[in-house]
Picture (cartoon, rainbow, N blue to C red):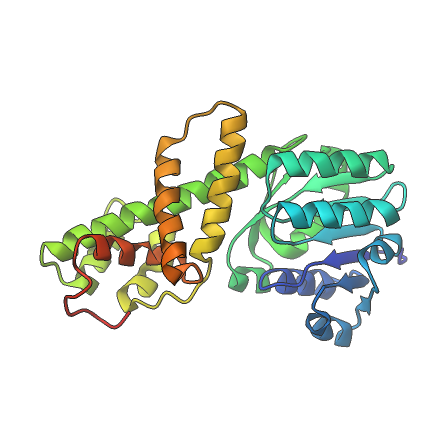
Length: 300
């Protein structure tokens, strides 16, 4: 540990993990990094981070381990490696979007090794990550969270402690399924208006200035108007999160019929080869089903 700040070990340098780690580094935390694709370590190492040879080695060198990874299998793999090296009294924070069940399993491993565990999924874009302005939902022991709040403040603008166990996992999935269902509703509404002869851009502008406007519709308005579905969050990623939510709900006997239906249509996008487009490309599926795709419109 440095004289003033704990050493942070970072695992997972994807599109959002990299700017998050850079914010922690910029806040003055000594950083140890690991990523399967070694080339992604370069910007952080050039800025002073130390590259670890593996995840267990990283955990042994860190006071706080943070991971930002893809899914449940990745969390179990990382959790097992961290458990093997983590120091007693250290902390493991996972900031991924994963299931409460997998998270609880890893919590048992980490606590059994004499360390603490916080769940801290995030909401926000890579642009917000690069500004340290993410929204972060944290659950786990509150005293541990409070003791490490400055680390979260390096990455997030709005930080919420929401409970002692897996509450943050449920909240993140709840928000994501609401975002996905909203995209489906907007897709249907736009196809409906288009079929009725509405001018595309005007329709989106008016909707975005109406009572149904929201930060989400504002954020996606230009994407929709330009029909540029370069992904901020892909349809395939949304399918993954819907599946996590539906499986969690099934285990708790919580019915989610609307979510289940929208998931099937999102799955159709993936099956049609559109899984790597932004999930708001859902509107193109509605146009196809309505027979609107052959009409003249801005280039998709």
